[in-house]
Image (cartoon, rainbow, N blue to C red):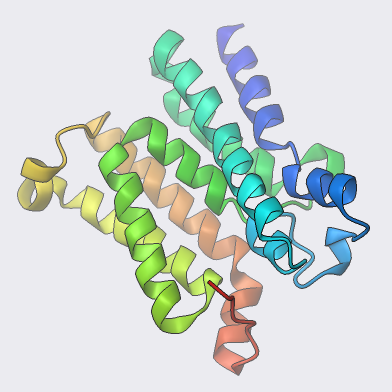
Length: 203
């Protein structure tokens, strides 16, 4: 029963389409007809409303952070399934015919619940790559890969500067699954990058 509650709560939390709700509520634009049609913060930014994009980013992070913190405190044995269901909820929301966002902000929210240092590593890497190449998709994929690699080699490389990492070996498998999911959700972007048709972002 506890596992069922965690699965449903985490999935439904992750499936809330904040970007779509905010743009429909505070503008006359349909996010599905803008840019990539994605419901995430990057596409909300393409509406020209930076404030809504920022709010979407925070809310998408919270819908990953809150369920995982809840699970971490009460049912730590289910932390992996809770984390996974939050991201799957965002990528495949039941409310939008299972066509959602790319899961990056929700992934970052989960990361904040599990490791502050890895979270800031992701943010730092994302900002650096974005400033250099101006591609949100490339930044997200490279940052998730960086977090995975650093986590895998943490014992020998960064143990001294990453004392807060939880669930040792288990988190590495979780981060690997998230990296695969992020690559999957960015498959169109990968083709666009290859064809040099990927849209750049303004930071």
